[in-house]
Length: 454
Image (cartoon, rainbow, N blue to C red; front, side):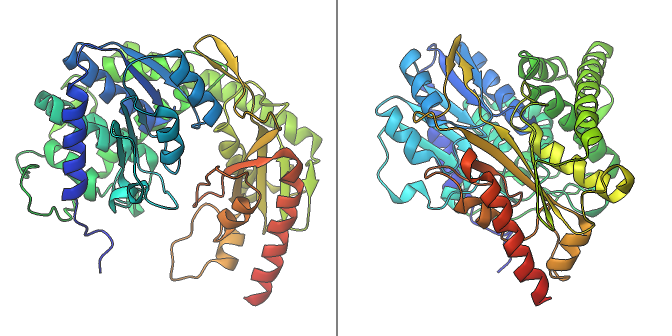
């Protein structure tokens, strides 16, 4: 069976029902928790459109991860419906327990070990995690396009902004193929259908199951949208500029016109000179800071811990005021240097993993410093990347390579505290600080076994 052909109707029906549910709270303040990457920021833009139509204000909190202690704090300190976007996948039960009867909607596309729909949820809890409805969030959905369908149900005029929501989907990079093409499937394709309204039309209230539709964007259109998504992520993920996510959101609001230099399908998005300058200025500041700190680490040429093929860096000191997401970029950067500038990274073997880690610090929420975890045990966010040679050595040739080799996610998961989830394709997760060196050793043991078998 083709994995891209699925019955979308149960999920789209649930989205529409969630829209009707949300309409009951018109005029009430909405509490919104969102991720800070392009998908999260575009989703936040969609929540703004919903709130504007409903006459509601938005109390927004940007988070890099749905930490339980932080979520409890938010529920204690706020009132009104709570909406999660690009967050909550794998944590639905925990959120539902905290929410109780509080109106809550979780919009996400991340994997979950067991669909939350198999258990009883509170009557005011609406789960819009695509994976819980049998729609693969890695290939067929994004938080942006799910939010778009919700916003469009509440206000059909949102269709005129449909092209913006594809930026979030492209930013997640789950659907891009060779040649820079973006081929939307599933929920993403339903959003694309509105972008290309002259060619497609859907009746979401029709019980006939939706099937796959492939629409190819021209390479130039994808590059433009991908560049914007990259800029939004660069702006949103930089923690040392507290207003970063808000500025990224401002870019979307300013660039919502129908004329300009970013074109997607039959719609266009305007980027005024002011918006372009804002993005360039923010991105340059981030890159300058990032490059300087990376160089400091490279000057020492001594990783925190090393085995034969697994190099472990704790980058907490160098990046103490940047967000947790930055360590994935750091690991990727080290791999890139190992492959293209080996003289500066002689301590990284040609065939190696880089395991980067950063302490999870207290988070400022609603003006208060809140520990991420109740038990106060020091934890690290870890992210793994593999050199191209290593991927080629241990990845079957008939399958696409992924940023880290197969089963690394399982090794990371072994060391994660109960209740934490792991990004399956990047070996990213949160581990106890005392376990990080053990994780590096386990990855090496896995490599020894895997490489000897090939």
